[in-house]
Amino acid sequence: RWQLNGLNYTEKNVKSASCYTASPDRQNSPINLVTQRAIRDLDLIDFTINYAPNDGDSISWGGNATTFTIKSRAPYTNSKFSATQTDGVTYNLYQMHAHWSHLGANGSEHTVDGQRYVAEFHFVHFDPEYGTFDNAVGKENGIAVIAVLAELGKRNAEFDKILNAIKKGDAQDSVAGAHTVNGVNFNYRKLIPGRSQFFTYTGSLTTGDYNTCVDWTVMRYPITVSVQQMSILYSFHIDNHRENQSVLPGTIIRKNFA
Ligand code: BO1
Ligand code: ZN
View 1: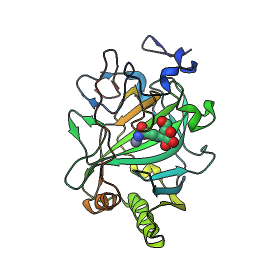
View 2 (view 1 turned 30 degrees about the horizontal axis):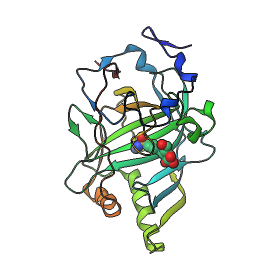
View 3 (view 1 turned 90 degrees about the horizontal axis):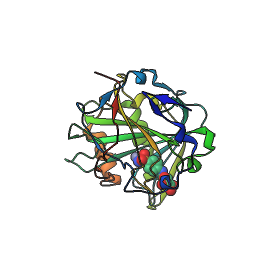
């Protein structure tokens, strides 16, 4: 049905059993991205992020969770991402969360030319053709994740909205259980770099069942967050990043820059 550089993407609508769980013969995530080995693809320039401002509705953390999660306003139709690098599908933004390590250690999941960053934010989208996120995780390219790397530097003001909610919630509830703060009006776009260079490949979720269903877009350039901001994450959880997975023969990593 779809063509890109002579490759067919008709597979998209085929339910693949191997998509439901980690499969050693399918590409897992995260991986190290080697700039010089990625293939420049001129069809990738139509990448668009179209998020409604303040679409982030609730922040949840604690309990068994190893990261915070910001969910979009249901039914998740306000914020869109067109991942033209695979098949021109427009995905709906479902949630955002992050991965990190501990004070003095970098905890991004993807690495670029061997460099690990202090943290990595994941903007998780699903193909609305499959109805819900849960339904889309079992489907080829059912999920599209934008990964944004973070390095230490100036604080990110929007990130403070998350951290303030986490602090306030802890003060309100001394029980070490799950917390949710609603009505946060989080603006996801403010955690995505303005420069649009990215890498893309098909891989897996990095937690849960490691479903091999993910169209990954990893932004080439990081945003900055401050040491003080990171220390609030460290006080709540230590290290939730998955180690790099081997790049299988046949996995194609594309980039939209020279
Ligand atoms: S990530 O962006 O690859 N780190 C990622 C990982 C897992 C999820 C979303 C993004 N979601 C989880 C759900 C679980 C579900 C699991 C399926 O996916 O939180 O409820 O069981 O493997
Ligand atoms: Zn993640």
